[in-house]
Length: 291
Image (cartoon, rainbow, N blue to C red; front, side, top):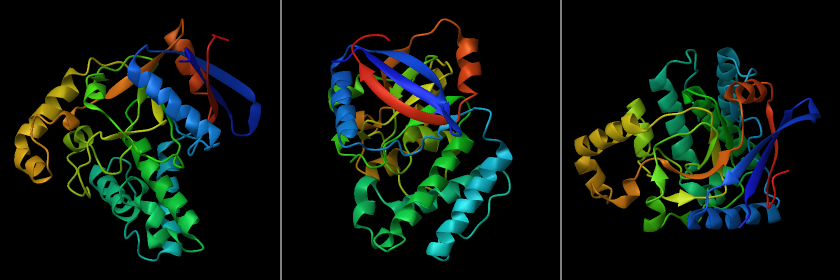
């Protein structure tokens, strides 16, 4: 098992200007499994799918995000007319954001279903999926309430499933500089449904799968509030959960994520100010020694 992970940020217009974030891995069995999956992604040379996914930096204004969503919805409609039947005008319109996200869910399908979807088997299929994915992730950018960095590999098959033992490592606590597993399913998990009251979602999909995707968070919370919200949601929607095959005490309904590593740092303010200056995720690599 490797001991450290380095996440290197850069500027889109200047790849030589970089900033490294150094993390020390947690010592548990899941982290060992995750490292193997990450190395498989690297061996296949899976690209980082959204190198711009640095949330809370100085580059993504509300106006830019709205333009980005509308531009990519229009691009989808040029390839598949009528796919989107709306325009986003208010970044705080959560109902509209939920509706836009539901269109992504319905057309993309669960996990790797897109591979056999005729929608993406046309000459412009890969271009359509790219634009559709950009809409989806831009919606998540709007919904992000704090600084974070998401590292995702769309080309990596989402085949790994959490074991009962893995769920014991889940936590809703967030630590500054914590590196956590990232939701790898298509749909909405309990946390999202409970928090934004989504009436448009295609389906409930709890935290079932994991992959080499991860998120770094630069905020702190004890997680008590989200635990309470999810608990109330489960109580209020027990019949819906049973209809979908989940008992109210099903381990698969565990909320939160697994902490994989911790950022090594001395000054929080320094880290935040530096991360805000970068707009590109250049690389990720794991290693034995701190460099």
